[in-house]
Amino acid sequence: MSDALGVIATAESESVKEDLLKRLRDKTNITYHSLERDLRAKEKEKPKEEKQETLEQTRIAETAGADKSVKAIRFILASKLFSTPYAKAFDLSELAFENEEHRLIAEYIVEREKAGERIRPSALFEIFSEDSEELNAILNLNYEDKLSGEIASRFFSDSVRALQREAIEREIAKYNREYAQITDEDERKATTQKIAQAVQRRKQLKK
Image (cartoon, rainbow, N blue to C red; front, top):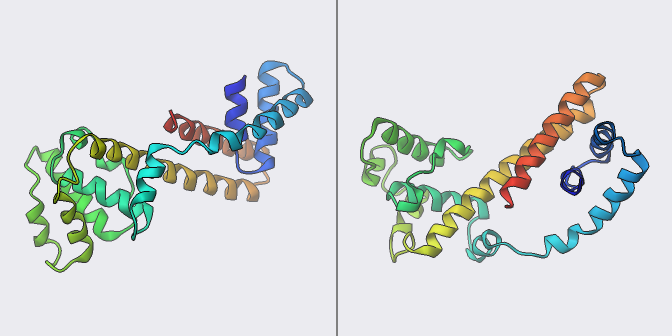
């Protein structure tokens, strides 16, 4: 019950929370009023949880200059380009890249992996010019042991989770916008279900 209320508490609109509470009421036979009271109590616990800064937050926050997401993407791409052991098993196709240069680099890596061929960072100069600032920023991460060691391994995992969480947040926001425009009851229920599933995936990333 506590887990279910925790998921509902993360919903981004009161209307979605109301629908989720009604579904929980129907499944548990607990009165809506009781569930709502417990939900409000659960929401009061959130500030305490939010104060617990995770490793991914502190590590990414420490990198100055570029946007946090860009820093994370650069590190992930560099780790894959230089075939670090901790990045070997990760499938880049699980991430979406909005930046064209990031997308092309990711496509090159994915294609080489599917073909069972060696990834050659120097091959990217056949796609990009040598003065590409973004490509050079990624390649420069291979110097000074920035990609080696336990800290780098953990930062890679944290960066992946951070990007996955951002993607889920965008998904939830999109569903919330759609929900606000829907009048059909069945469509509202279907969208509520999508929101609940996305919220659950977001919760799993925190574990």
